[in-house]
Image: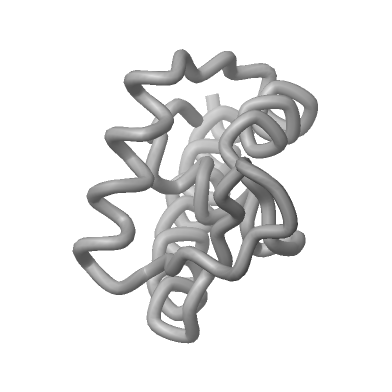
Length: 95
């Protein structure tokens, strides 16, 4: 999976994080390394759609949180991915 918006939502589903923490988390769970431009572009799009929001910061780093709308979107996308994976697996077993 390499869609930056889904990766950011998946990272924030585990709790609030600032950009660098998201990059490290995404690298750990997805094996994908998002550059700063890609990450912050995704963050901007997600904020514009209301799927994440900035939260109060204790220092200079800006943390973000997933919103209820973002959680619903992530759940919908995961259901679609699950269907694709199950279909592909069934088809591989049939060959």
